[in-house]
Length: 287
Image (cartoon, rainbow, N blue to C red):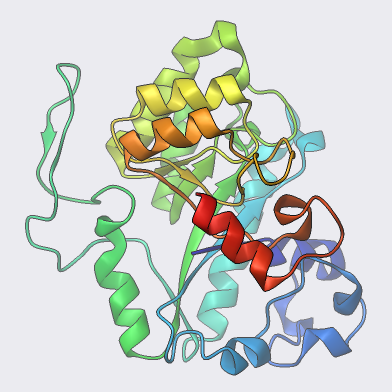
């Protein structure tokens, strides 16, 4: 799995006008894409890496909006980013497939909630198994399984109704916070955190804990009835970055059944501007 920030550059450089986006070319050779760390994905390199053809791969396109939009137009901007992701995938149907449902899985791993919830027997099975069919279909047709994630709880505008609509539009994970405080990341707002996570569990939407505080990591692991994810983090013991996961949280994560996705970002791997494949391997052995 990969967390991918390219959609934000589409907004930053092209105002989401895909007719001007040379996705089929090597962006390393083109300005302004070559100068941005968020433009490491294009069809040229996906083919070179045999992604979708020989490697069963999925991309979580990030519907990120900055914290400066909080309490202003964060909901609208997030909707626009979901829209550009869907349009990008639709523009290249031979290379990518939008994956949102678990159609075709018969009686897949049922999830039973505690006394507050009933047993869910159908629909979107949580996290990994629930999307299996769509991912396998994409791989068999040599396409990249493309999923949507909302990066930051500020995009909700503190509304569970907005969360539900993001899900209807295809979002399958949400990062609880970004670089700004939300009710999810404040200790006196544990009730709000619980409501958001329980609704995500009910919908079949993955809970992403990259960016959140350590206390929120612990609270979320306790509250969630499904495995959680860290979409772009590494191990704190190897690199002392606030984005990374401490040992005691990793222990709780193992019990929860969650995962820390593979990170290729230098500053999370080696705490420097450079990193090697060995750093990637070391980080994932540690996790």
